[in-house]
Image (tube, rainbow over all chains, first blue to last red; front, side, top):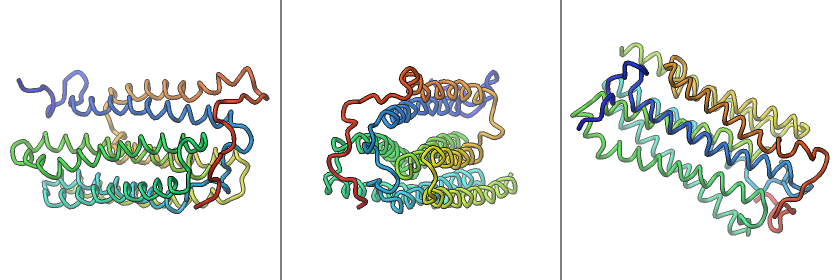
Length: 199
Length: 113
C-alpha cells in the first residue's frame, strides 16, 4: 500500500505528511533538549560558590568550541545548498554539497573526540564535577544526533540517490526533511556553545 | 523556478556570513568583563538572533504553513514552562543556598588545557 501525501500536500493541512512528521519530531526534540537546559539552570543556580567554573576558570577551550561552531554553521550552509541544487535539477551539485556536509559533520566529530580525549586524559571525567557531568551529557546527546545525521545523509548520498531516478519529488522531500533535522542540530549547538563554553 | 532558487542561494550565503560574524561577536563579547547576569543576557540574545536566522531561512519557517506555526507555538509554550520549572522550585527559597548532591567544587581540573 502506498503511503499517502508524501509528495502531494494534504488538503486540510496544506502540508505533506513528510514535512508535518519531521516538524512534530523536531518539536519532541525541543522538549528533550529543553529538559537538559532546564536541568542545567537548576544545577547552576543552586551550585555553591566555586562549584561552577567562571569564564576565566572554565576548563573548556573556547577556540576549539568556536572552531566547531564555524564547522557546524558551514555544514548547515552546504546542506541547504544541496537542497537548492536538487530544486535546480542539478544532481552533481547535490552530491558535491551533500558530500561537503558529511565531511564537515565528521570534522566536527573528530574535534569533539579530541576534546573528550583531552578532558579524560586530564582526569576531567563526568564524575569530577557537576559542570563536567552537564557538559558531557549535553554534548554527548548532541554528538549522537550528529552521528544520526551523518548516517542518514550518508544513505541519501549513497544508495538513497537511486530514488532520484524513480521519484524526483519524493527524493527532494526527503532531502528537505533531512535538512530540517540537520539545521535543528546546528541550532542546538548555537545555544550549547555559549552556555557551556562562554558563561 | 531556477532564477528563484538562484536568488535563494545568494540569500543562504548572506545568512551563513551573518551567522559566522555573530559567532565572532559571541566570542568577542565573552571577553568583555560584564557581570554574570549581563553576560548571560548578551550571550543569549546573540544566540537567539543566530537561532532565528537558521530557523527562518535555512529551515524556511518564513512563509511556512499555519499548521507548523501552531505546532511550534505549542512547543514554545511548553519549552518556556520547562525552562521556568527550576525557578518555580527556587522561588520559596530565594536568598538561601540549597545544597545539591555533588554540587561541591570540582575535585579534579579547573585549569584551562
